Each structure stands twice: as structure tokens, then as C-alpha cells.
Length: 516
Image (cartoon, rainbow, N blue to C red; front, top):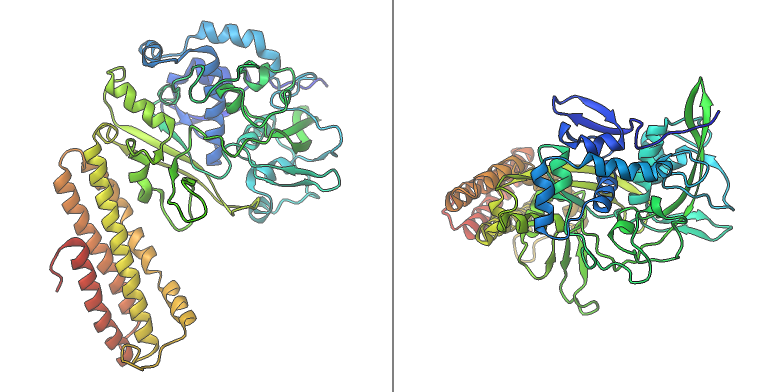
């Protein structure tokens, strides 16, 4: 049986249509009829990012967005030119076949590594032992993937796979793929067409980063050998969007008359230079800590910190210490020049929280939140947003200090007295962790924050006033829940009474209010 699965025409991209119904479509359909779908909708959030990167690579190859005027010409048509796309697909359709004998899509076999079960692909996009932990799939388990599932795993691995050991005998080691450990941001619209357009950023010889003067910048499927020339710096943005971090080969089999994928080979591919700035990431220069001057930090998902708490730095487009996602700057430019009509925008954030230095995923994340276009254009609003979040962090600090005082007094009745007994610091930390006061505090603020963000452009002063009332409420709510949990023993009542005064003082200091 000759196996074929051409990504241009077969259904494999999960989307939501305009009626809210999930369905699966081809790559051609996703571009030619992009206005007919709301969004991509893969099960794993970072797979959505991988799909969008692939679609953008095709669009950048075929439609010039060298400046806002060129972008505006495409926008006014409300769809991507089907004739242009079909001509391109006809020329390169053989390179989009997942099982082509020559140049299978996004694949090349390493000659020395052994064939492994296809669940190896799932483990690469799931973070090694994390995939096994949640799915209980081992090498001994027989797994078959549909070609659509294998295609999604393949493009996700090339964009998000993690560094680690590949083959010790051959001294082969994986490196991190371009998007692996940081948040990938997209500006999203009401349709897939709008989402793709909003992220179809300026693309020319020098942006989003310089093209090679010696080799043409091409997407992976147009290269006869993706790994030649050997490089760690992309030839241009097309090369970067289709960067081949792995050498993967999929092996199809026939099962009950259907083509399935049962095995694969995998080895390291191209290692990306650590100095490359991903245009879809958010970067911030750090402080000089005495060892590294102007160190650059990338925004990552954090187990203990919701993304909305960093929305100020994300939207602070005029801060010279910040390099925001390129699509946000592009939207600001399109609005300012009148190319794009003013509108509310949705920011999508996708990726994984990983254990530093290890091929281990702690969790996957996909978040969306809306902002007014005013937040991109009015720096005063961003400053007010910064004030609001600074007050939230300051009250969090006061709650933390109060919790520490409460824990000390609860564990030792006379801890506040000179020469009184001081409890073991480890016991104090364990008790604070058990109370989870900060978790209670932040958890009650997420919905009020988005209400604040929504009202901010209309009346900044009133929005900030309401937000500070919510901060006060959240701080007292967290404190009172902890206090109630301690019961009514004498040491608890004394500890709560003293700590309550400290909490009141802290709130008054941050919010300039009178607390009873």
C-alpha cells in the first residue's frame, strides 16, 4: 500500500467554525477560507501556536507585508488571494505529503538512530516523563496515531520540543526548540483570517530580523536539505518559522485498510542560537546584578503567578527596557497610521511551564484576555495599569508580612516580647504555606482585574478607585479566612488581634485609607 497524506488537502487542523462547531480542515482550507473559521482549537495549547506559525510561514512567503500600506491592501480584500495560494501549492504540493518517499513534510531520517514506537513523538511534545505520568503510555504499549495526529505532533515538536539526552552512545543531545520555554503571544481577532492578519508583521530584508546575504530565506519544505547549510542562526524569518529542531521520520502502516503511524526515528536537528529573539516572545532587560549587565529575561508561565499580573510590562510598548511581542507593536503602528480601524483586541498566550534545564513539563497553558486599543496608543493608561498592579503587589507584600507575624505569635505566645521564645523558622514557613494566604488573595482578584481593565479607558480615575476597593476587600478576605481557621484558643485570639492591627496599618499605608 502506498501511503499518502497531503497536508494541503487532507483534514488535520482542528478549528472552530463560525457556528461554534469544532471541525477539522486542510491547510489550504485554513488559508483560502480563513474568514469562515473562528480559531484553531487543538487539544494542547502550544499546538495552536505551532499551527499558527506554520500558516504564517505560508502567508509570509506569498504575500508581502513590507510596510503598513502593503498590509492594508490584503486587509481590504477580507481574504487571502486563492489564486496566489493555489499556484504556490501546485508548485510545492509534493513537499506537503507527510509520507512522500522524497522530501516528506518536516522530516528527514538520521541514518544511525534506531526506530522507536510512535509514542516517542508524544513524549517529545509532552515533556518526557510528564507524558507518561499523565497518560501511562510506555514503550511496551502499542500505540497507533492517525496521520492527522502525527502531523500535529510533528509540527509541535519542531517548535516546542525540549533539550535532553537523545542517544548517549552516538553522543547525540537534543536542544530546545525556538518556542519551548517561554510564552508565545498572538494578537487574535474574531476570525482566523483576522488572527493571521494581525500577526502578519512587517517582513522585509531586515525585519523581523536580517535575512542572510549568502543563502536565500526559504521555508523548510522548499529546501532540498533543511540542515544544509549547517547553521544556528536562521537565514531569515521564513527559515525561523519552519526551523527544524529535530530530525524526525515517521513510518506509516496499514491497519484495517487505513493508514496509521506506528513508529518513528528521532535525532537532534538544528540548534537555535540562544541570542535569537523570538518575535512572538516578550523580553525585558534585567538589573545589573554585579555579574550580568543588562541581562535579558523572557516572560514565562509560572506555577505561582497568573499572567495578568504581568499585563503592565506586556503592554508597556514605549519602555526602552522592554521588547514586546512584535505583533503588539505592529498593531500600534497600524492603528496610528489609520490602516486598521480602531477595535478591541484579544491577546492569546500559549506555551508550557517547564522545569528549568530539564525536559519536564509542569503544565500546559493557553490564556486569552481582551484589551482596548487605547492601551496600545495611550501611555497614560498603561501608567495607570502599572500603578494598579504595583498597589496589588504592595498589598500582597503586606499580607505576607502579616501572615508571618501571625504565624510567629500563633506558634509562640510571647514571640513578640523581648527575649520571648521564637518558633522554628521552618515551622513558620510551613504554617504560612498551609494557610496559602497569597493564593486566596490573588484568586479573588482575577475577575475584578479584568473588569478594571475593561473600564480603564473610559474613566481611569474611577476604575483605579474601584480596583483599590477590590484590593482592600481581597486582603481582608484572605486575612479573615486565615484567622477563622485558627479557632478561639487564647493564643490564637491574641495572635489574630495583634496581626489584625498590622494588616490595617499595611492597607492604610498602601491605599492611603483609614482602616478600623
